[in-house]
Length: 141
Image (tube, rainbow, N blue to C red):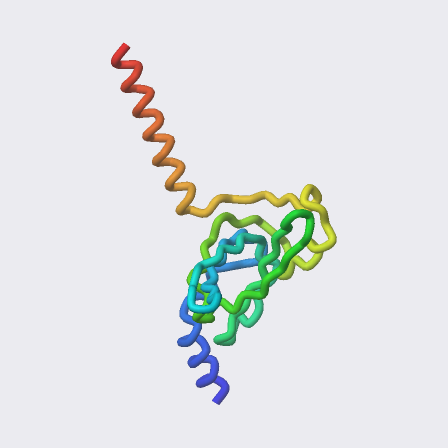
C-alpha cells in the first residue's frame, strides 16, 4: 500500500521536486484574479525552504526584502495559480533550511552565487556578438 502511494505521488509531481533547492533565487509567476480581470504577478526571492519532497503537494518558501521589510511567500508549486517558477541563480549553502537568513541583514547574508546555465549561455552569446562587432569596426578602419 505504501509503495502505491509513493508511486502515485511521484506521478503527480513529475520532476518538480528536483528543480529547486535552498539557496536558489527564483522568480515565481502567479495568476491573480481581481474581479473579472486576470493578471500575472512576479515575485522574486531566495528559496529558504523546500517542503513536501516526497508528496504531491510540494511547497517552496521564498523570501525577499522590500523597502526594508522582509516578505515571505509559501508557494504550492503544483497549484494551478502558479504559472511558472523560473530559476535565476543558485548559491552554495550548507543547510537544507535557511531560516537563519531572517535575522541577518542583506550584507551579512551575502552568498556565493553561480548563474544558471541558461543565463550563462546567453551571456556567452552576447560576448561573442560584442567581439564580432569590435572586429568589424577594426577592419573598417
